[in-house]
Image 1 (tube, rainbow, N blue to C red):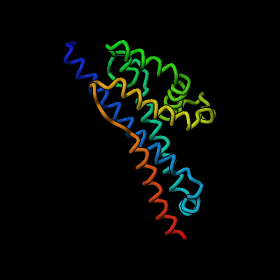
Image 2: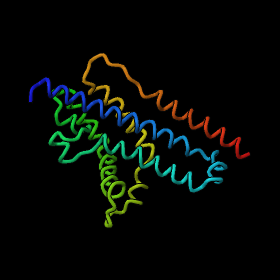
Image 3: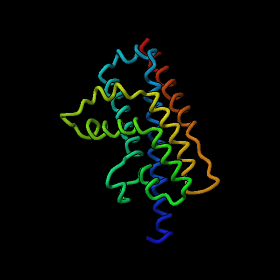
Length: 189
C-alpha cells in the first residue's frame, strides 16, 4: 500500500475512533447524570420507560467503547478501526509505545469489556456469567478510561498542532439532564 493511502486510512481510522469516543462520552455522561437519586419521583411515575431508557443508555455507551477497543482478527487485518488498529499500523515508534502502555494500563478493564461485549451485549453466551462480570467493572473505571482515551487520541492524532476537548460534551450532557429533569420534577409535583 502506498504511503498516501496508508496516511488516508490512518486519518480515516482516527476520525472514526474520535466519533465513537464523542458518542460514548455523550451517552455515558447523560446516563451517569440520570443516576441522581433526586430523580426518583420522576422515575416512579414512568417506571418501565425509565428502566428502558437507562438500560439503553448503558448498552449504548458500552457498545461505543467496545468499538473503540475492539481487538479481533479483523482489526489485525486492517478491516476494522480501533485503538488496537492504531497500534498495529502505527509508524511513529513513540506513539506506538504510548498506545501499548495505555493498553497495558487498562488491560483488565478492556478484557472484561471484551468479554461482556462478546458474551452478553452482542451475543448471549449460555456459559458466561455476565451479571457477575458487570459487578466487578466499576463505572469510575469506565469514566477514567473515557478520560484517558481522550488523552490518548491527542497523542495519536494524525496532525500536529490539533485542538479538541471533550469537556464541553461532559458538561453539556450533565446540564441537559439537569434541565430536563427539573422540568419533569415540576410537572409531577
